[in-house]
Length: 387
Ligand SMILES: [Fe+2]
Image (cartoon, rainbow, N blue to C red; front, side, top):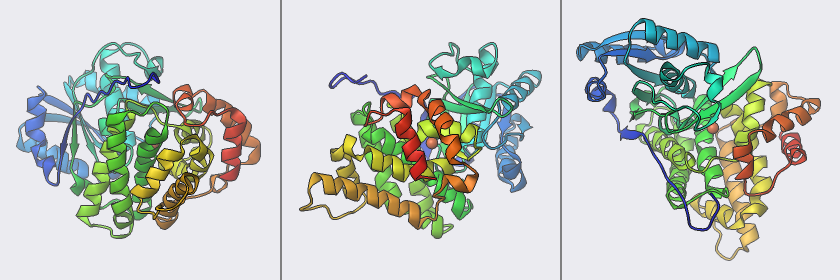
């Protein structure tokens, strides 16, 4: 992975992007051979009519469908298996998942388990599933997780307080149908934390040891879009241009990190999500500034480039000062969008930190690629400064 100049870049998902592209749904289901669709969503999206927009498009195209609207935030393995049973008992041959990261991860996981035996946790890790599931169309309603274009689904088991990633070329959607119209009503706070999750994907991939030219190009473009439009998307409400920029940023960041993994913010997000129950976007937003401050000495050049991407005047500065300007510019965005800043607000205490750090060290893929070598004590330090 780190041998000089060698890389593999893979993007198994077709991406269709643009305002109004949801209208093509019926044709796209038919293109993928679907005749009976499991529509995966959550109660909120069912309540505000977004699920109904999807089902009425399927009705217009005379495609049969069954609704599964039970997905919870930080989705549980039990919900995935209920979806698998429904898909089987109803004889569905394609999944349409419409929602945020939890919904899209669940939709992809239902498809995967429908064609791979056993429990979803049997496939935790990278590249373990051997069979492709039924086709999946992923329709994001937030601009953040990028699940529509990633090779990952993150699944929780609330009773066991564990959270794990299931990844690989079969944990993908066949089509990411990205219509920014669906994201314009997202409230400011969710826009902020999901947008910062997208930024963290682009940034952690960009500065880490596994980054490579295709990912770097996608990360740079993604960060440019965030720099230009996250504040407008949060505070300007229904501005379609800003929403479109953020959805593009999120999908591009996902395509970047598929091939590179991420870094410490995402390693720590797993146990802080599972044990302290902090939503993914919130925990990543909180950790990102302190993770950057820890990492800056591990990749001065890249952090200096981040400063330029965020429009900081770096001419005449030393590399070290320019790199610090990159950290400050990103922290300013976190502040400007009023994202959460403190783990303590979620009930995390100093006594919790050593075991959380031990758990995060198990996220070996994200730890190994981090730009600065990291041990459990370092993670305790980052969390202490974020408390
Ligand atoms: Fe994330």
